[in-house]
Image (tube, rainbow, N blue to C red; front, side):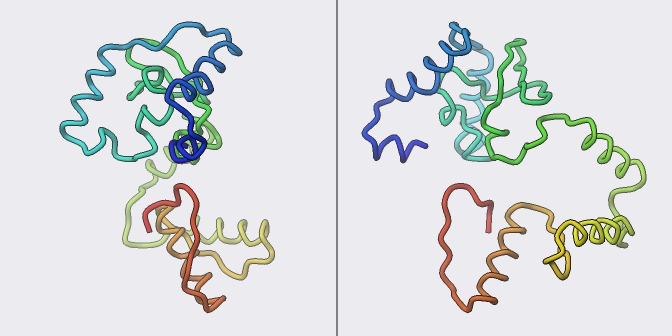
Length: 181
């Protein structure tokens, strides 16, 4: 977003108007974000964690400087609550576009809890992997097999390797965040 703004010769005040003042006016918010403790925590974090966060995309400066919290205490659906009780609507999909169902989705939470209670770590496979593979192949009849990945970066690595093998090409064009690969 910052690169696009620079290419368009937008100033910080332009970005503030576009992303905060305009949205604030449309939503009738009016007040700026103030949580001295949250900002102090972020400054402290920057002395211990490069950039203050583990992901570049989670830096509050990338959202709306001085109007977006660095940390939260609770999140449900698309709402985030900071430690001061301020409420925010997260329209950035968890900053990394991986939260399509929203935060704390009951179905996801219950499925994860069920798996943890049944035992989530083993050197053996679980037959749920086979059941899920069957379902995925039903949904995607063009696919011949299923391969699971633990992370987005691992999934991207597999996708790039498959694309290279199938096409015989070795160059890859990317745009935006695609995980660590």
